[in-house]
Image (cartoon, rainbow, N blue to C red; front, side, top):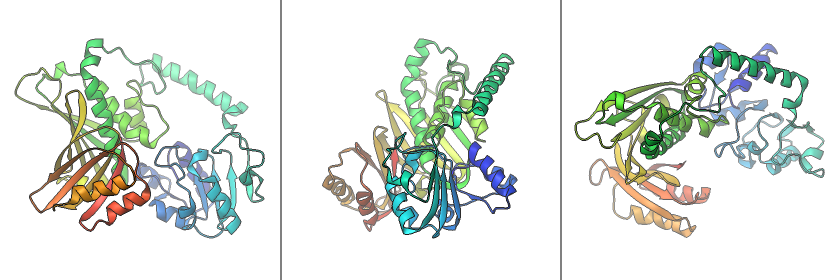
Length: 398
């Protein structure tokens, strides 16, 4: 579970032991998996088929307690679990119950929700748990590896190669930063929104960014915007910190190809950009309406009065401030829908900050975008999904 650098190396060793290896990682390139004989599968297929589950994902809002009562119930009886990723990806109380019930035969852990864990922890004291301290980086071998990595990075930087771990970014003039600030925020949030819409496929590999501007190409430096889009695409699904220095390197390392296109507009070049559009090709979407007519996930945004706004999702035009969190619903366009969804959220004291509806034509399909200050519960989201006129919905953190 998680097919990055560590997950890939574990897979190689498991293959060497004669194991049949499957992996779940919606952002991993399928060709890299095929190259070492690993099959990429869905999350549910992975947990229901596996005899051994090895966790290698970062701790993000999407992976927090991803193994819980519900997911343990879908596993084979007698499954064995290894967690050397982050403690928070497993609900530890749920793991103890699964061990007691015999669903999980054994668990091996060197990471915990609270480190060090309490001495009277039921998990640590369980007879079917093997626990070791979280000290992997403190061994002689690890320290030597870090020293070599630092030396190689310095040599590479002196040769002019891309620096993956530099903390200082190239200088950007203060006046340019001031002018681009709201567009920098827009760029990151478009990337963050787009990647949360990805459900699977061959992994995020091809991203196209379109800038519409009345300025000449040499009057608009897009390096910072591209870096922030990369940051938005990668940080929600990774523990890597992306900045202007390492953005291109980080994207290349993950097999993501980002291309840029400029649309030259007529009019005054007073504003640096009219809109930014982000498209992700060759992926499935959690929200089918985000797929454009040409088959890519497409989101588009503008800056209005200094604030980032989402103005297009797939083929639907919307207009919502990109603040807080967002619920997107595709629905049959009919009276009462705004009130119905608003009432469901109001019952749970979830404040709606804005709402916008984009539609193809009256009484046909529409997309409703709802901004909320708090994350609704699973029960509230289920109630929204159960509304007969709502065909699909997705909750997104911005």
